[in-house]
Amino acid sequence: MIVTGYDDRQGCGYVLRTGADATDGTPASEEVHHGGLSVRATPELAALLRDALAHRPTALLSWQGPRVPLTLEDSTVLAWLTHDVGGVLSVRGGPRPRTAGG
Image (cartoon, rainbow, N blue to C red):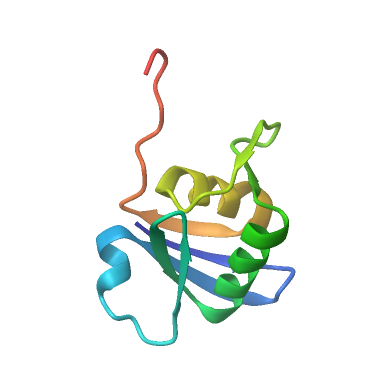
């Protein structure tokens, strides 16, 4: 998955790469490891993600909750970017939306 966005609080754009997209050796990105998974992110987002994992390890799954443990699984980290960080502009190869009953 590749997510691009803009964090108004930090005043900078960001890119997050997961899975096979994280292994392409993208320059100017840092690896973040947690729970056996790794992602690559621009330096500012990597620092924000490390801080969240260490001090506020939860993510909103929707605008009204619930909060769940923050992991580096695609659906959870995408929800964190969307609802906690904000500014998601595009998602390529993201998780499929959940359907009723599944």
